[in-house]
Every structure is written in structure tokens, then in C-alpha cells.
Amino acid sequence: MNAPTPPSSRTFEELVAEGAAVPTEGWDFSWFEGRASEERPSWGYAASLARRLAGAGAVLDVQTGGGEVLDHALGAAGGRPRLTVATESWPPNAAKATALLRPRGVAVVAVPEDAPLPFADGAFDLVVSRHPVTPHWTETARVLAPGGTYFAQHVGPRSVFELIEYFLGPLPGASRRARHPDDERAAAEAAGLDVVDLRAERLRMEFHDIGAVVHFLRKVVWMVPDFTVEAYEDRLRDLHERIEAEGPFVAHSARQLIEARRGA
Image 1 (cartoon, helix red, strand yellow):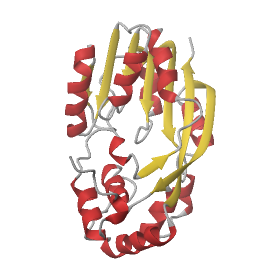
Image 2 (cartoon, helix red, strand yellow):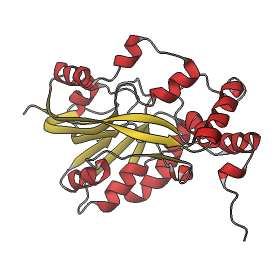
Image 3 (cartoon, one colour):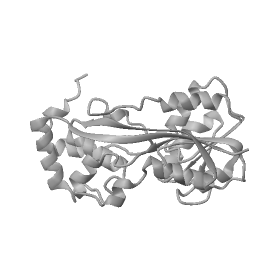
């Protein structure tokens, strides 16, 4: 069997075509291995989640994506919640999460990301989420039982802005402030939650070829909302030439860990 052709030996057209053809469902980023990289936060969200799942009774995972993080954490947990439910808004992800999580006894409920959660008040003692598009603090507080915990990893402010602004130009101040940890703390507290832990880190990302950039922007659609290869072909070609001449394109992701509790 022939070894795969290294990205650096492929043409711009070949790399872009490859990045445009890869399926985007779910949150499995293994395709990027050797083509893009991102530092991981020091707190180890999946391992921390597994420990919490082991001691929980009723768990809700909000915006589960393809269910990969929850599946991994359930596999690593020393015990099982008596009830675990996940929500997802995008139909391809909901289908993928259902196939992955149903064997573990997890129900996946299709819920639009801006809709109220279809669960009773106080239904869960643990609500979790990894990279929700928008955290809905009031709904989270409502479905938490008294004394229950929200444990999540959120995207922080100015995440991957080096790449976003390469395509869109400088963004306004409001965009640069969005998701600031101080604002998230205030929103959580306004919903009646007590924030007991809040940590933030900026982490190095590298894109080693233009195919990885194309796939990333197709997969994380809110980065450059109007992205298509055709619309941004000139910028993509310029970036390809820059990577070929100077090495990986460097950006920085922003991540924050938040743990908040509802009063008894």
C-alpha cells in the first residue's frame, strides 16, 4: 500500500479540494493530525467530566455535538449516572450522537440551540457542556436541582481571531469582548448560580496546510459565517503561499472552564 502524499507536496488545488470534501459532522478532529494542532487546556476537561459523571445521578449534556466527548467521559467514568440525556441542534450531529450514545443508554433530544430546554424544573443534578454556541444561563439554572452543578468548557474571547480577521478584516470591539469570562460570571450569577471556579487560557494553534484551513472553516461554521472556497479563493491562495514560504499559520484559541452551582 502506498504511503499518503504529504500535504506539502500537493498543489493548492489538491489541498483545497481535499479540505472541501471531508465530512464535517461531529466533533472528531482526528483528520487534522499532522496538518493542524491545538494546545489543550491544563485542566483536562474530559477527565474532569468523567470523575463528575461517576458520582452523578441525573445528567444533561447540552449541545453534545456528535456525542464524542460525552461518550469518552462515560467510558472513563468509574460509575454510571442513573439517567443521562444529551441535546443537539444540528440534525447531522444529532444523528451521529444518537448512534454513538444510544448503546450507552443515553437519549439524544433534538433541541434548537436558542430554544428552551424541554425538561422539567430541577430535573438534573449535573448539567455539562463543551463549547456551547451560546450558554443559556437561565435555562441551565432552571433545570438544575437545588445544589446541582453546571460544569463546562466554553470558548473564550477572541478565539482564533488571527484566522478570522485574516479573512474578514478587523472585527469591532463588541466582537472582541464577546464571551469574556467576567461577563460569563455576571450572567451566571444573574441567573441565580454561584460561580465556584472560573479559569481561562489562550492556547497555540498551528495550521500546516491550506486544506486544514478549509476543513476547519467548514467544520466550525461560525468562525467565518459566509465561508466558501469560491468566495475566498484569492485569500486562500495567498495564505497557501504564505504557509509554503514561512511555515505554519499560527493562531490562538481561547478556552475557559466554569463550574457553577445552584443554591440549595
